Structure formats: structure tokens, C-alpha cells
Length: 343
Ligand SMILES: [Zn+2]
Image (cartoon, rainbow, N blue to C red):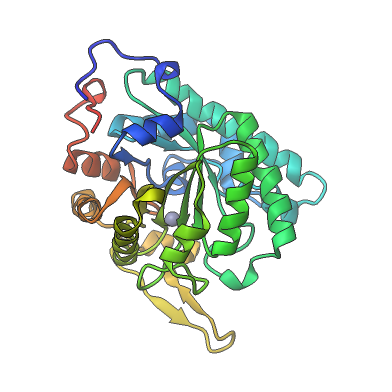
């Protein structure tokens, strides 16, 4: 594709399934929570900063989306990560569902402001949905009946709010991914599914990434892969998925990889609970974590691309500067918002 001289309006772009069938490379926007903090978003509070930011400081949320749009992101991840009725009800049984619904609606409205401000540049709004419980602990995933019920209602809120697709992300188990895929299918929403993978590139529940690929097949699946993990682990998952699709092209989807931007993570073992915890999951020490410089991170994204990833980005710790660099490193953009070149 070439540089657009008469920008299309966002309504002119094909729906997400068609667009991602035609494109061979797309860029996700990067970390959001850290950007909200950086720009002085309302404090986290008991119900999560994401909802509060969208409800009370929507201009700020739009501002962060604008920065990602200018950096060349193709997929704007709507700021709804911890905004599920289940998670909110845990904070407040009476108002949790309403709070989640209002927060999700407001989050899409804030992202849509960006979508209409950047014509001539495909920007798809992807709802961010994660596990009901801890994203990094597969042992606390609720039973299937709860997963099916909760994710059905949760995905409905995103469908109603106008999602182009949903990112089923930072998932600790294949079982929960399957429930979320069913919910996306029930509401007719295209989806990307990605797992928090450990060493070897496999999900944390003991399943292989290849088994996760087989379990989440769907006509609505745009991509599958890893996120919110170490770069090396995302690379391992990418290589395995690439081999899987070489063996069986019938179910080929985009390989998705958006690892965290941290230079180094380590695992701490607790003798009391017998569990391992990656220190970068502790928000208290997030500020002390070393984030890779944007240029360096761009090289890792280029490596992910080289090994087959075709929907790429960065998760925690990454910024619009990171996005601009990896988009640039992959030739997706020249300079300036009006000179975007579709890969
Ligand atoms: Zn993350």
C-alpha cells in the first residue's frame, strides 16, 4: 500500500476480520497504566485507575491514545484492562457491574475521539479483557460455569460499546481462554488471544502454546500469541506457533507478540506459600524496574517479526516512544502522522 493522499475516514476501513486478513503486519499500542500515571491520572482507588480515568479524566485517556496513534499503532487497545464486572463486584457487590459497564462505555468513547481525529490511518479499537482472577496464577481460575457466565456478560459490554475486536490478553490458562473465545463468538466479535507465557513460551497452566492454538481456533480468531511476559519467552512462543502454522496452515492466524518492556525480570520464591512470583508483577516496585530504551526494544520487536510475529507491540513499561521506534524499525511509517505507510 502507498502513502494516502486523500485520507480515508475510519468508517471507510473494512471490518477487523477483513482488514487483518489482508494485512501482513499490524502494530499494537503499548503500555497504558504507566502513561496515565505519568500524566497525573486520578489515583488508583479501590476500583482501579482505568475506570476512574475514563470516567473522570477522559481527555487524558484520549491524549494517551493520540500519542499511540501518532506513533503509528494500528490497534488502539481500549483502556479497560481491569474493568470486568467480576473484578469490580469483588470491590463492591452492589455497584460493581454498573461501574464496570459505565467505565467500559467511557473508555470506548475516549478512544473513539482518537479514532476520528486520525483519518487516513487505520485505527481499530480493541477492548482489553483479561482473566477474572490473577493473570499470573493459573491455580485460582474459577470453574468453567463461572467463566462462561462472567465472560459472556463481560464481552457483551464491549460489543455494546462498539469494539472492533477484543484482546483476550494476559491469560494464565487455556481453559479460561476457551471460555472467552466462546463469549466472543456468542457476540460475533473478532478476537486476539494471548497468554502470559513462561520459559519455553508455554502458558502458565502447563499446557503447550501449540495446545492453546488448537483449543482457541475460531473463524473469528485474528491472532494468537503471548503478552505481558519476558521478551525471550515471547520469542519462544512465537517460534513454536510459527512451526505449528507451517505444519498446519489451515488454521493459520496472525502470531501476536507484545512482551513487557523491562530489561530484566527475576522470579522470587516464597518459602511460606511455596509459590514463585515474578517481581515485575508487583506494582510497588514497578517504578524501580528498568525499561529497555525504545531503540533497543525496537530491535527485539524486529526479531519477533523475523521469527513470524505479525501483530506486534509492547506491554507493561512500553511507551508511545517505544511504539514509534518499533513501527519505524519495521518500516511501517516514515515520519509524521500524515505520512503513515501501511505495511
Ligand atoms: Zn503487561
